[in-house]
Length: 250
Ligand code: HEC
Image (tube, rainbow, N blue to C red):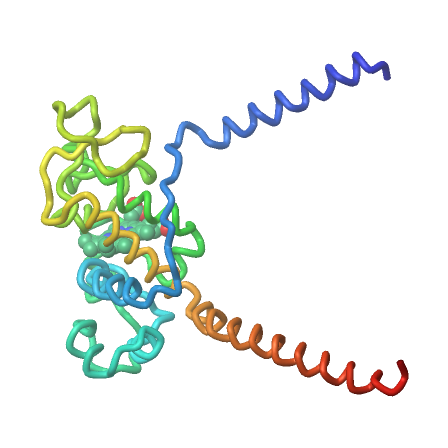
């Protein structure tokens, strides 16, 4: 094959790959970055509180028990009981939705999925973007739609905190919404939180969901520190031994 032909062939392949990539993106909006910090315990605690207050009515997180959550997040049993346990009074219970499945089906047409593994399945950035991009849409049963999950069956659970967003073409010239998602949305009715506060709240919530998806990760954070310390100490000891052994030889 001549160089020219080979060049044309490569160019063709690159064009194909690019076209494929563009197609896969399918016009979806770019995801916002969740930037969660699993080592930030205060953020996890705030996230847990938001989760039980705003999500656990409909969603369960079956793989997470209240007792384990309390231990991992550095909370006493009393603190967990007073602030986080609304659906149950036994610390050993998993986080179960208060809403029954039959009601959920009747109201939403589909049951709210268990959120134990959502952060792993969807990725933290997707969930962050999802919670940022609910917008007003009167054609939907709950008056809300979503940029990353079109025609979603979930109402905007955090609307009182975020306020109401609308698509730019439907809205006047309000302030830009906190999406950064191609400036597609704007805030038309403020909520109880400022834009920055809402971003932080959603970040905390996603952080908590990442933790729920893999609680063992927290242990590994701690363990990782000990392993490094062990290696350091071991290195020093082996250096000393090495010197000791070779002292007489040299
Ligand atoms: C009033 C009930 C209700 C509340 C409250 C609620 N959700 Fe939902 N949620 C749903 C329903 C129903 C679906 C299924 C939507 C669909 O498939 O169209 C859903 C879907 C989701 C999904 C998508 C899951 C997936 O991977 O497909 C995520 C993530 C989610 N909810 C997170 C949350 C979070 C976080 C909260 C708390 C801030 C919350 N939800 C509060 C009813 C609710």
